[in-house]
Image (cartoon, rainbow, N blue to C red; front, side, top):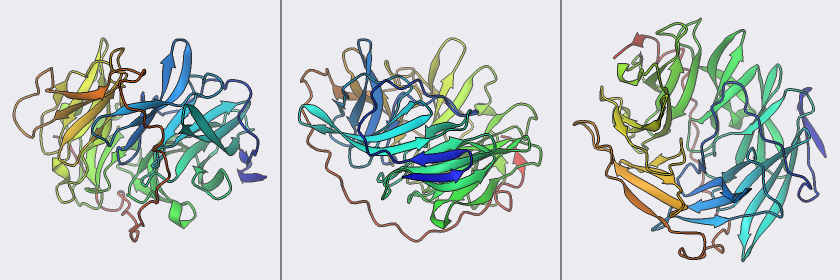
Length: 415
């Protein structure tokens, strides 16, 4: 069976099993940052990554919502390539994308006693040369997964897991898109950064209305404006724009639905470092300025973790825990930053740090509390039976976001 989203993008649903040869390394769409060392579900229950055993790569699922984290290896009949993408689902299964010969083959992996079960889902075929496909961040709810295919003149959002008949296109967007941020807890409102006529502007794709596209962020006519992170509870947005400094992108923040202008804190301006936000503290419904924001900071000689809140004018610097999977982590509602790490002694661990509000910068040791299994060989209990699917919660009524170019972020303020 074949479906088509545009002349550049088509799909074929394959009912056969696994592919017989290793896939080539995946390519990332232009403008997208490299993927984190592991991918975490929206609710922080599971993570998935490619782990290395000698010279062989294999998928690995981490369970994070128990008293201590533990990993379950999910090796297939042959090693995976490093470019293969994996993503955890809300029921504990792991979605895998294997690119090969212009196709992207999707399957769900799950533990079956001593082995690995695999449910083939189908394939997305990208016959047009130069078309790139990658997974979008895990959708809220955990029962669906999406991918973004970027062609020469248009982009398409694909539902690759959770549909009725295998991968299917659910939205087509004129222009080349990058990024990918969820605005709501229902997995309906998706923000993409669309390049058109030489400029990049964030747009909202409403998957509940047939992929309807509307503008979201436009600070100035000639600026490049991207959305990096969003918190559905408070409406806090982390953005990157060159509006305050043409030719130089800076980190800023705003609140969806607010009348306050965009802010570009001076403490987030680090010209010699790459500063990338990767997690926002949830649950701060009425106080977005108090949300903790975690940042991955890469300098010329080292990388570390930054913690910042919009209400503060100070960026705290934390030494990353040994073996941290860079760019991966999540917050609890009560303000505990959790960073997954893997070392030779602890191949599945989480370092937890309570980041207080106010006061001086944090100590370099960060006061991390660590938890994790000590090895792959039996120190952690075998939980390979606990991957039964669960029913997702019912979704509340949707509210369309206010386009930021119309009201909330109309001015420029630097603090």
